[in-house]
Amino acid sequence: MNQPHAHLIWTDDETPIARAFDDPYYSLANGLAETRYVFLDGNDLPARFFPAFEIAELGFGTGLSFLTAWQAWDRSGHAGTLHFTSFEAFPMSPADTARALAPFAELRSYADTLVNWLQDPFMPIAPNVSLTICQGDARRTVPAWDGQADAWFLDGFSPAKNPELWEADLMKAVGTKTAPAGTFATYTAAGHVRQKLADAGFDVQRIKGFGRKRHMSIGTKP
Image (tube, rainbow, N blue to C red; front, side, top):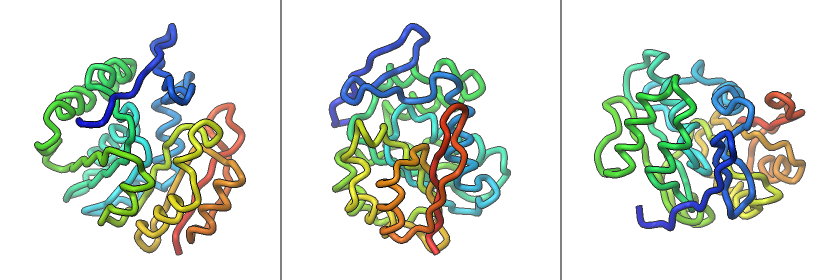
């Protein structure tokens, strides 16, 4: 890991907050339920899984979204490999990752594997899963990526606090790097974000958000 590690603040209930963006990494109420609702349900997963399915993500963060997708892939019983590529400017240290994922007992074995992998990321993480973390500014790393995502987890911090990750050119790159009939899901329903994703070629919908959040956004590339 050659990028500077994220600087964190820990709340009394052990929720990590990014110091640079003053934003928590996951729901203070139920991070795992939120992740399943927003990113799995929002992309109609695991129903859309097929062998060699490709997920791409803006913002690896704690790795919770990846672990949730990995568990869903295992439970689906699909043959082949799930490919997961995440774009992260400020990766957490392995120690902070372990601390952030500790509350999610259901994912403990997956989290332990991830933390070990982060210390030696040149080895495969699992026989049926590949993980690539592209470090650096997503405005450069996404356009340079040679993949095509079947589903995007747009998991950056709030657009009001992390506007760089929601710029029009980056959303266009997301659209370009999406396979036909590919999808995205994101917790944000900000109008300017939805417009940028529509301009990037997605049919965008605003739907009910998780918990007390009124709305979120999903979309499909025709």
